[in-house]
Image 1 (cartoon, helix red, strand yellow):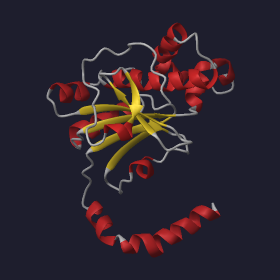
Image 2 (cartoon, rainbow, N blue to C red):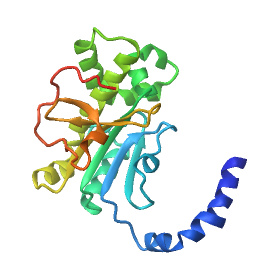
Image 3 (tube, rainbow, N blue to C red):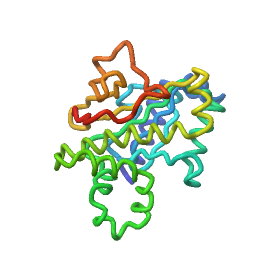
Length: 227
């Protein structure tokens, strides 16, 4: 706690004072263009990896960057998505998984979740991911299998996003783009799903054109392990 309190003093004494105009503007309202959905993992910092300021990202975090299908759960995910799209009018939704994801490791090894019943229940919303990996990636093991699981889960959760009425309507109306990313902690690289190639590619190679995952591409076209 001492470190956090010292950081708070540093923020108030130096950072806030140098950006007072920004925070006064933010006090009047927010206008983010992007909903960034990622894992609760403490090693992921959306603003840091995208180099964005406060007010630029509307952020949703949970274990495994999971979005239950519309009506399947009473958590805050559906409300956050609805508010971002309908009230804030975000133009892009990024769903970002990451390397070394503990939630995806738990999905692969459910016996290790015996003492974590809430986690086990939550991961049921990634059952499609588990089945896809079990039935299509039997030739992989270890880190390669975890990477495939992380990537497939990003695509599964994007499909779940499309079941939300606000998202479906905005996609059809051309007001919204979906993006699937995977962040590699140890290198700082970000890989984006390319629907034309059917795999995750280094995002740096996609700048300045970023391929969005449209509403009706086929999902699963074979192994996509690229990290």
